Image 1 (cartoon, rainbow, N blue to C red):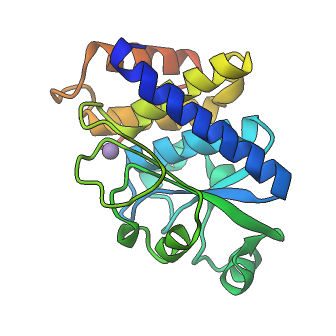
Image 2 (image 1 turned 90 degrees about the vertical axis):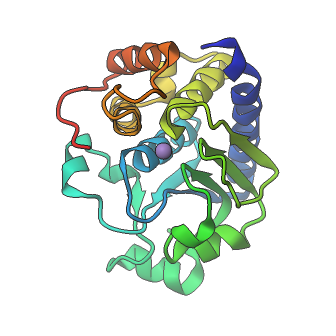
Amino acid sequence: MRERYKEDSRRTAMNILSVIEKLKAGNELALVFPHRSVDGDCVGSSTGIVSIIRSLGAEAYVAIPEALPENMEFLGISEYLFRPDGDTPEAAEFQKNKTIGGRKVGAVIATDISDSSRMGISGEIFDSVDTKLVIDHHASVTTRSDSMWIDPDSSSASEMVYYVALQIADITGRDVSEVLAPNAAKAVLAGIVTDTGRFTFTNTRPETLETAGALIDLGGNPGPFLL
Ligand SMILES: [Mn+2]
């Protein structure tokens, strides 16, 4: 990891760890919000965060505002996704009580998204929960939270999430493979591939390629991504 990421990714990792402690203490869960018109980066970064939180024993879901596009089905990440507006008993419970499996939403995290109005019906939930984290590479962030990491120089929110995973592994004495599951690593890599135009845009930096290599080691697959 390059020097310029270290301080922010460490701080974000510490904030996520304290969110996890809060969730466990209150038997609550976290929702992670991608934006509407989902793309590889918002899906990859939000899936990565959910994998991190679950690896440390708390519950979390990606609150996906629409069906996962067909060209991302190969990621095999349905276990991480929850559709608040879906036609399922879980969605009905959520719409009625704002709970999932009886658990309240204790924290909300937005990745690759600058505005809660782009979250679909979940935006209201995002706005209503006090414990908020934001990880984004868009300079035009309008969402406000106590924990924000905004880096317009980063290729993607997914690349930033990988650095957070490295820091969480370091702080908790785990290997990063215990923090990012293979299918989550695949999704994070898909996010980087998407936002760099398959490594052709000028946001592709040396550390972006190092990160992509590390994600392949973790189970990522650079093959079948569609832009
Ligand atoms: Mn992005």
